[in-house]
Length: 163
Image (cartoon, rainbow, N blue to C red; front, side, top):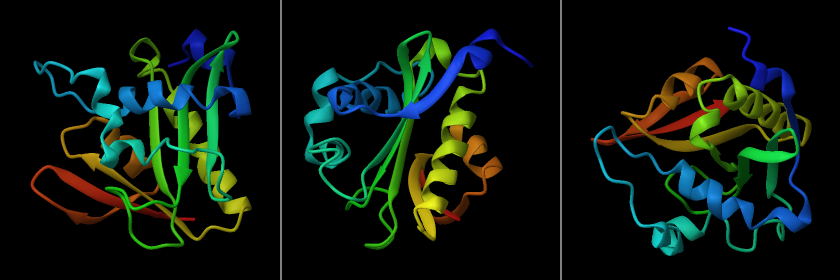
């Protein structure tokens, strides 16, 4: 389906003055099951979540792409090597991705993800990992992009994509 947002969407690198946006997108990345109240916004201050955004851009393995629709950042995909839920080893970046709710389901996430996978290949990475709740509809996006389930718990998958 060709949605107008997809045509107007530009994928670009995060600008230095935009790193605070990652806090918004980190909050948006938190999976909230249907019928569940979203968590308080300050949840992103917890150490297991702040690792995704703290000092972002200061390390060589920090990479971020923004989905821009008519001059507004509406989504982000970013990676860094960190000890997070998706950690597999110290050479593999962990990936986070999110869009503002009104831009989901329009192909923008697929564009973002594919662009990041291409960027990581060009940078010489061999694989990328992520953690996702089993109930999250994004699991299908990751499988379609080439991610495979490496481990699973009762609620989450640890997924890896070979580049």
